[in-house]
Image (cartoon, rainbow, N blue to C red; front, side, top):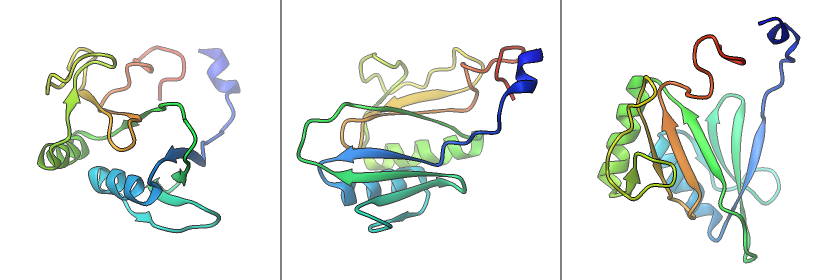
Length: 141
């Protein structure tokens, strides 16, 4: 599509994630995903290094905070590894974004995906094929 040629090369660098216990939350997510983390980085953050260009910066708060949704596109091999860590850690997971904990993997969109809510109640999703970027759709790469 012609408008795709006009898209800028903009990358999300970091996202601040609120937590009641930022160190435990960052550590838990990093362990589940199998990525590095740091208890303390610049400023007041505990960082999870998702990839070379993206950091989730956990910040401590006692204030109410919204539950955020984060989706990670992973390879088939990474899916298997993360899925094994989720099961080993006893993390409840489900196949639908707002569905019950059914301990199933969704395969409706040409790949595999699942959702969980640890740490801190945020909604975490991993998928192997982007349903938002199907072949032939805007933004597909």
